[in-house]
Image (tube, rainbow, N blue to C red):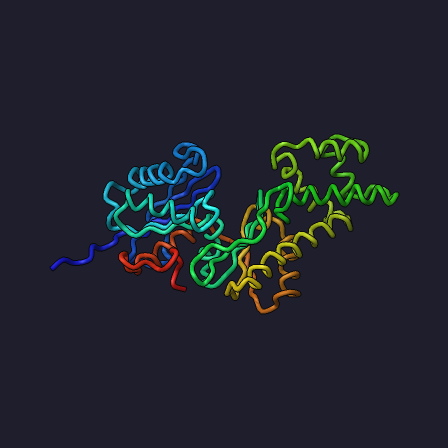
Length: 322
């Protein structure tokens, strides 16, 4: 008679575009206790171009063995991975990892870590940073998303989108014959221009999101200085993020909460308030919270939950049982 091996660790991994963070803790310990280990490395040190699940699996497994130990058979591993944009990609990385790791494994998109990090069981996660997207899992465990169409076409509320929409508002005001308000003055100064034509040219010559996104703080500063245009841009951003949440709910996603995270919304109370107010109008039944802890703790929570699953009969599509 054989006995089930003790899975000694819960391991959470947050694979971001620039950094990868790994935390681990004893499965038998207090879920609220500090992790036993915590390490951050540059993602570029182990990951190549996106889309190669086999290479990603080998890289992640190598990191875990380097920092946790060679025997990972007693550990449950959950990973939030930038670049796993749909259910099939998450499954592909899971399958590849199982060829390297003996214990249970779950892979989700990195945006899906913010809700479990906050202990929210039935929640839609809204990420607002360099990009923006709303994510959740459907009843079959499939990844469902709304928004996230990139900095030129969408990503409402993100840093580059705020500047894009702010510039549109300023140029429209100039077309109306209005004088520059604080938002216009700040954008002119940020781009070193003196008229609307030059501002439009400077923005259309942008080649990467940061060309716009680095000026997002000026939008919030202008609102603080009394700019009605900036205030409207921020309010519209919150409304569009609420629309993304509403779309997921109308597609049958079951949720009672929204958790928002990401560099922009975590640091800008005006955008937090705009999203909170917009949700109160369209979905007043939802609670709202802003992430106040590292997303990797969401991966650790998923790993703890995964440790109780039957390895031979995993939950369909890798979904949690909550």
